[in-house]
Image 1 (cartoon, rainbow, N blue to C red):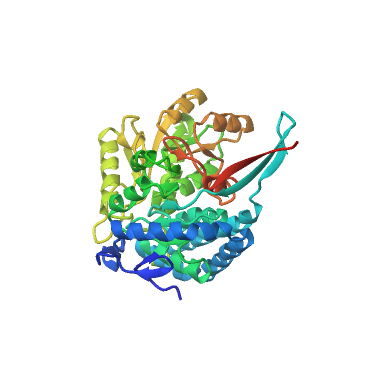
Image 2 (image 1 turned 45 degrees about the vertical axis):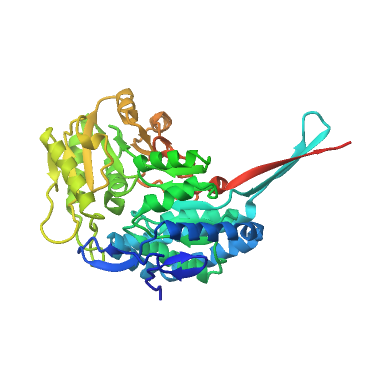
Length: 479
């Protein structure tokens, strides 16, 4: 059984916070407290840092095959405990169990992928242009890392960062979001069971992020930050990294355009919209935020999408037949309510949803808005909720200009039956990823990340491990 753990994990041991502080973990479907977990402070952060630093040299010398086998065993354990982990995730985060099971499989796949990459870290050699010197290249771990994960995919965001760090030979401190610490603590227990040496992974759960993270980033011993979260917090962390030039990779906010051309297969487009909008109740950085639909098909697309969205069953994620769980908390729901109200005040037509249900829990109904004004706040705000806002367009140049008119550039979606148009528009979008006639882009084998203010670097794929490796060049003269 997957035990519900509630202490800090430092140096391979489960310990209370140094000052004894705890914080509650709520069930967003009921508002009730699920558990209390340790609430780390500055002293706990220093202890975790010391454990990671002390373990780094020995872990870096560990054979790649040994690191690979730990990840492979952890992958197998995660899959064996799919139902237990899914229930844990649904309880603290809210997503329906079917979707939580899908995330467990997705999370496990990062460990399998990077178990294979661990044994493929390469270097090189060659002759320099002067002909008198040889060049030897090797790759080595960047060193102790701070990994900060969000609440919306609590298991997968952990494995997507931990997997390449383990494969590369880095030690780490993981700070999960305070809303969803239980999945991360369960993951730490699984890795310990899989044979990960003490001190390689340390988990500090905390509601005092500034007190924990800033000293680590400014202290000079953490050499890498991997962060997933909002652009605003990302900017703050970048400033904290500047003093000691900490290497960073960041997956930040999104404002994804979803473009439907007049020649699109509307059945395919609506299917794609349901995935791109409703995965994780819309609480995803990849969620379609702005639906640009060609004027000639906008009414029909809106009708079909509203019909599909209106048929979804809203309720606690643990209940059979539920399609849409609660939003993460009352703050998140209030944001969605305000964005919808603003759009309606500016003339948007509510095709379905739009009203908060009475009763406990942070529920909000799947909502489709038509005739949305470009001046609406939800056009330049990441919605993070089950709201599809439809605007119309007339030609390709216009929609590309409007789609790119944002500081974010994570992902875009394009629906058209024309291959030339599909490739042309995909290449014209200022984003790191494009779904062409599909609403799903996330895959452990593909590089995930954005451009502009949506982030730095990539996670997953062949390049994911590069973020945790440095090159060393040795020059050897031959006389």
